[in-house]
Image 1 (cartoon, rainbow, N blue to C red):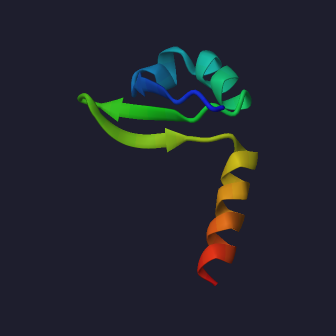
Image 2: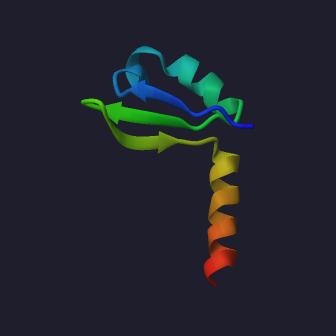
Image 3: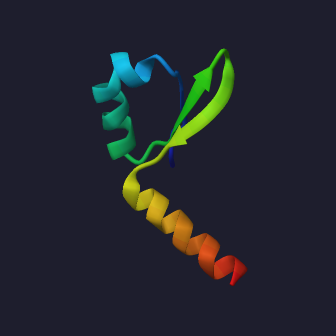
Length: 59
């Protein structure tokens, strides 16, 4: 089961190595800006699986 992590945008610069470790473990990371969700970081392979799923689901 995946553990979704929520981190502030400043962690992209200050703690990228830690975020990369989480992403490598297939844990999505939600990036927040001013306390609100702004973006999601995914492992590249998880992203490819999501794209493939969405492609076949809708086409």
